[in-house]
Length: 276
Length: 307
Image (cartoon, rainbow over all chains, first blue to last red):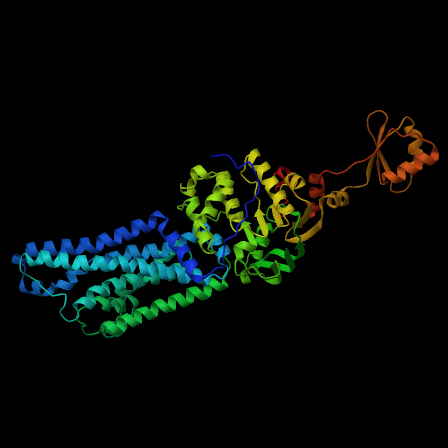
């Protein structure tokens, strides 16, 4: 460790301003980029989004000859192209929870709220920074996965679909929108729970436990209710055709965004009211 | 200036801070003293608005901390509990805080140099020793060139060089007219640093006084007297409420009279005095005396002795 400055006098500071949202946004961006978990989680999310469709396309292409007509009918080019989204969402969700829960576990939230004691700008800045970075990253990921899986399938002249065909571009970009909203939802959950393990568990419960649990219900109930779950509603964003007992892409997307808004509202109220 | 009025905080059934009313004045170093668990850190969290008071109010430089447009310019705080993300470097930690106020990067570097963290500023702060973490916290507190500096146990984990450095720094900051509010459970440290003391125990105010008055108040009236005619002096002074402890040859400890009273009595009786010394309790003893009944953990005398 280097030695202390001999003169124990504090130099004056002339140029400093007030707390402003664009400054908090920059501050949260600095925080986001300056921990390793960010790069790791986003890299994993990015690579999985591409890797799954590529593998899926290879397997489908190589086994196409031995597949039954039913099996072939069950394969859809867009399902293959967006197969990674369901896995990537987990990495993005974990990071979303961590972005706020780690502030509580390490105690840095006290520093954060000492600098921005009104607190809410911190939540808005985290959400905005994270939404932008995850969307900006996921858009090329889903585009690459779409065109890469199509290129692999094209060599066997199977399952071709054009990007400009109705609904295709919307679905592909919908995959990126979905992952972005999942990150936002997870961040809000993290802000509510304030604990990494608890936040990830809460997210997993809502997205991975609740849907299969619905199968316990009588089929008619299940069909009526399941489409309104956050996961099922959100998934319509990247579904090409809307089947029976599912919402339209627009309705599903809006409902999922509504769930995100509700989680954010709860997080915001608790953030202002609770002691740190 | 920090002004607390009837400041009270409950955590569930436990009252951590109980009706504290005090004012921390600019221009002097004010020590905030109390045994461990007496509510010092809670009080500081209330001042910063991290926790909301159950009752009462506290303002900094005339406003609630939350209402200041540039809070880091008003109060620079070092909190006792760790408040740095262990995966982030000292530089990035300070930079993120600076950016909320538009404070430039060179100020961050300036503070890193000031506290001597230059060589480790890019390392993850989770690898820091206690002393390095403490220096980072001090850099954070001073980042905004604040009017009020509030430090919770700043000498914890610092080496003797660091302790002397922070002592001089605090005195310098007070001399510049800033408000300096420093908590400690170490009486001896406060004796060297503070001008004024706010003493609490079990969340309640015990004393709000200058360091000198604090000692005087806590000292019993004890005077050391040396005289060749000790027996005659003893007879002159004897009375209700007065007792004596004989020390080595020619010396006597008189309890219950002031030095003035003893000197006058000796002069009237024509008894020569070779020494007349009021025995001051040390700050440590004064602290122990005042907080004896307020100790949170009466069953742990070892901890008290360490203070």
